[in-house]
Length: 320
Image (cartoon, rainbow, N blue to C red; front, side, top):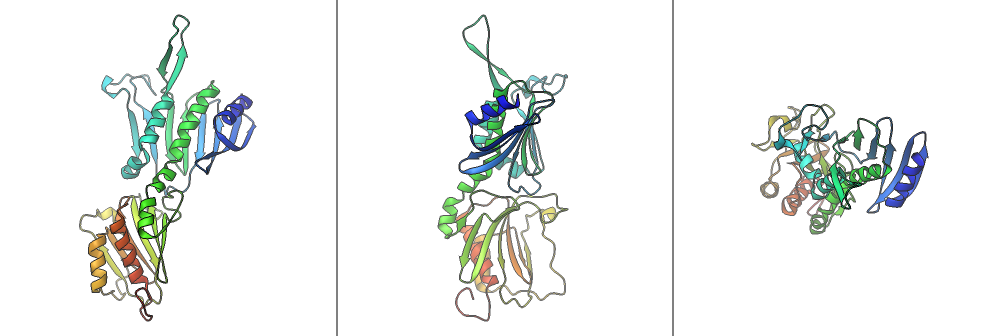
């Protein structure tokens, strides 16, 4: 069966490497010039696992809520044809389940079957697969074995489109990067590598998408503009928007530190950026927005502000 599955994967996907052994198939598959590592097992319980870049503790679980799916007890008919979604970050889940992801999941659900008494192929719903994003992986699992290698290919296709969401998301930032003169990453890494990099004078400013302030934080989607301070005198500053929930507040600066004075230029940029929180520490600057921000004007103002506070005061020029 592993050999049959390997042949199906080779036929349907752009495979750069594939190996079948001990009842499982491992493959490296190219999708839009990005490589994904996948592992497929058909029995005793079928599963498909596709690797992801960093997702910073994000979790998303999806299962069909048909009346008899996943358990023997019937549910109300109004719940048919819908997903039960469990997540620890609703904002990121909404972004992840874009039109492509939703369409892939819906398409993977329906299976054609030919009836002997009819010439028309019938479509029936397969509600046995559960889908999950967690621990930097996309998973599709079934409680029992999957006997069809074609169905395994269908689920792999859906899983790959879910895994490719960070690439599609990064493309949406291309106009922002051009407007700001920034270099953009090929895909979004939540809590990982910067999405945008831009240089202002002698200062390098980065834009990250992150969730957690620390390992113990439950997480909340944020867009963070950061810069390393040059020639800092140790001054600090903490600003928090009135509408930011307490759970999303950054940790306070030390009470004995010297407060950074907000000069007219910084005040103007703060008014334009309207960040959720601003942290100026002795050696770096973090300007955060609640959620995923793609407004080039607000991001641009935050980048200028981070560069302004990170500049070397003893030098000359606008960013030194």
